[in-house]
Image (tube, rainbow, N blue to C red; front, side, top):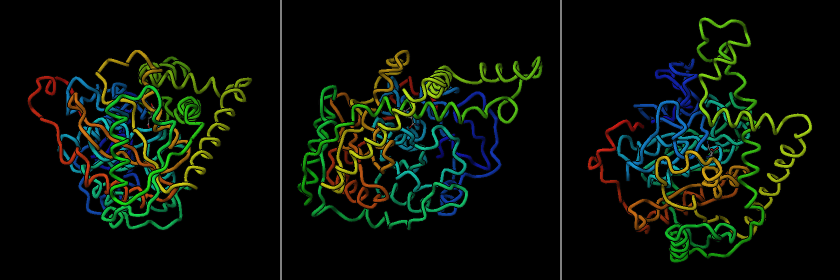
Length: 422
Ligand code: GLN
């Protein structure tokens, strides 16, 4: 299953936007082409928050996705359809995209594995751009071995993406069979503070003990700029989005209204009718952050914060090889619960946005099922281009996680049949 902001030659690519309804890309994205060459069969495109902007899949122009574990809950976002499809057993593997958490957070909410590779590890050619300095494509799968297999075939240099890396691709499948003796694991204090739901805190502490039992050593580390991550992420991501989305003008992309009076009317109506509320909010915020007089105060300040956050990771990785943190502060929330409160929605990215800003790879691994019957994931983070250690640690956790092969009880809920989609 391919998230619908990734181009496919034989199926429409809408990015979850009414503006792109029926759009056909000229060919496969590099990641799709490589997955097919590796033996993958593309069975469907998956719903998402419009252009990847969201954490609940409620921002899709084509309706929300429901969580297979509980049809009254969100599956997370923006790769909600990809994660729900894998959790529901519709396909063993999916591609998602992650700009600030969009592979990892839905993976955690749906009890599946999600990997955000290092920025530059997987070509972005054929990915509908949201925030180009942050966008990544990554696998979602039932188990760690599945994600390793997918990443092995989609990773690597691509002449069509100048930011894709020349570095060789490690054998992730082999790494996923190894374990962690001697590996130093860092637990960042700032990720375990107030606002964390108890089952999530417990999952991280239990997972740390499990890694210790597997021969790793666990140390506490400090990452003092973590608290600024979401704010810096939103300034930068929205600024880049406001620039990237300028192409949707009814001329280059988007169906132009047939009775447009002039060019202005054409552009205004295309966007007014085609974009959803969240996309409009981000274009306005991003345009403001880049405007004369405010650029220094917002955009350039956020760039400086981004450097400080990257430095936090560099410092942490001088004391350890992999970090263990929560993915999200809590389990899947209810549909509608945060839809009218953008700030509380943005705060679900508090533990994923910093890694995106730093460009480092990170994975979400199912750890347990909470008392409310919803899955809880934990996040592993590694130094740039060291996805191998990520897979080693993820596999070590998977072997002993109380989650084991838990899966949602499907078909028992009326709600799953009335209007939900993947
Ligand atoms: N939830 C974040 C946002 O709304 C991240 C989205 C993503 O990674 N595509 O921007």
